Length: 144
Image (cartoon, rainbow, N blue to C red):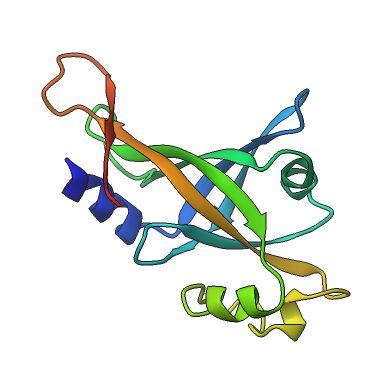
């Protein structure tokens, strides 16, 4: 089951990011990249609602799935973790994993006053559908 979760994480490009400020829940699709420990990286503008939430509450949830899967046959990965805004040397390290053609990637492009910032989700838990369950049941998998 761990292999299925890794396959899903490696074969997709977008995740649905769940955030809250304690009152308003929000879900945002973001392009992501992953390191060898299955931590997730993405860029966002600081004035987006999910970024505002993350500045107040660092616990986030996420879902990764291929939306083109036939109904009743699909699987995805759900999880949670702690998000951090990367700065300085942390950006340089994060750029080892995060790759995009959307914007120029360097420390200057991801530091104030530039509009985009690089975030890292240090993942805590991963869940997938239990292939042995008769109903839609999620089980935790250890992929670290």
